[in-house]
Length: 119
Image (cartoon, rainbow, N blue to C red; front, side):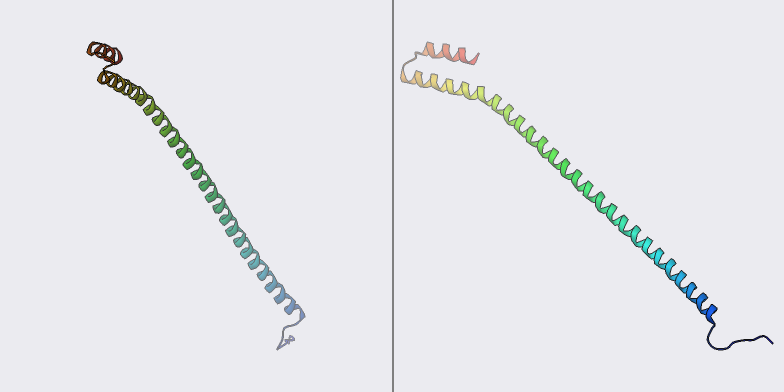
């Protein structure tokens, strides 16, 4: 009859059980640690991507503002250039009319000066 031991396991059985538990714990901990590292890496990459996109949007907005400012400045300059000759001509016509009403210019002189100014 073989010797069978009842009750607690022997020294070798206890060591085997401890090794199995320790190996399982190490494998599970390694898997969890790898999963956490992967999750944190993905979060970091997402944050970096969002920062890059925000920077690009800011640059595009700044470029659009500069383009709008340049366009507005160009339109304003064009309007001033167009308005200046008309304002100058109106000023001269008003001066001629004032001189005519004051009697400094005769009707013929006023008509000649006006025709010269309008051409």
